[in-house]
Image (cartoon, rainbow, N blue to C red; front, side, top):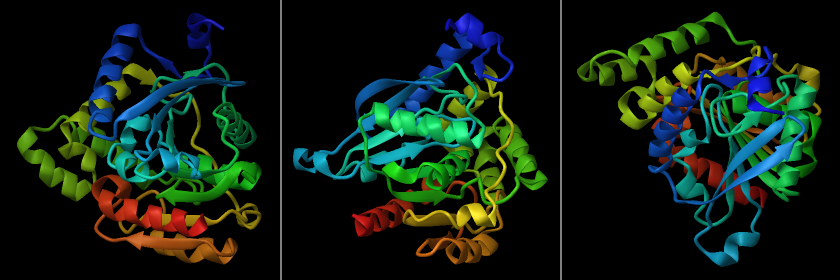
Amino acid sequence: MSETRTAARADVGRYVNDALRDRYFTACDAVYAMGARIRAELDVETSFGTTHVYRYGPTDPAAESRTPVVLVHGAGSCSAMWYPNTAALSADRPVYALDTPGDPGRSVQREPLHQPERAAQWLDEALAGLGLDRVHLIGSSYGGWLVLNQAHRKPGRLASVTLLDPGGLEKVGLRFFVWIFASLLATFVPKALRPRLAAWLEQPVLVVPELRTMIRSGVRAYRIRRPAPLPLGADELRTIHTPLFLLLGKRSLLVHPQRQAERVPRLIPGARAEIVSNTGHGPQIDHAEQINNRMLTFINSVD
């Protein structure tokens, strides 16, 4: 299917034009450069379009056989957002970072995949296309919903799941959308004011120039065409038997951290939950070393 035909669909994400797309890709590459060295870029064909994948590490060839990590980013972003985490995670095992079709990135969406069954089918096909039969799946925000949905609907390839302040646990409330809008407006304020606003909004994007440029470029360049996902109910969460680790920002505006830290382990036997202090919705960015250590400890315990 041609890109012209794809762009005409109202239920498929698209770039506004080639010039803005290329400017966004340039901004993304500046963010990728702050993380681990990319070993390879792959394109995987699925029923929903082409999924672009970045592969990292490990540095020790003997570690190639270890169970790989697969990263699924949040809404309105791409896999460049994992730059604080790729070096630590890929030091002793392969890491794959997916650009989700329907979000700004180098994937090409041709069919909608926001429905839970279709989202799970897309991710299963992407993993199969990479030749991965067993993975540690990590998702942030909307990517957390995708990971949680996978553990519910198609867990066969999953060794574990890690959820970083994820969607899928509560209906997205007005306070979260107000925070997103305020954070976007704050990217336009003078540089001297950004650290103060970053602290007030719990928004690390504001003090990382490359990340700020990428986010702003993506908002201008790409049009997301999907509704907010519905949360999984209690009965759906009870079906999950994959080892699960939930990390929540204490000042998150997407979920109520204390409520979910109690609820999720009660509904999913064996699930672990931690609340990270002094952070909001992006703990893996502004507390990268701490979160990397937590994730690796959990993953190694499962292996």
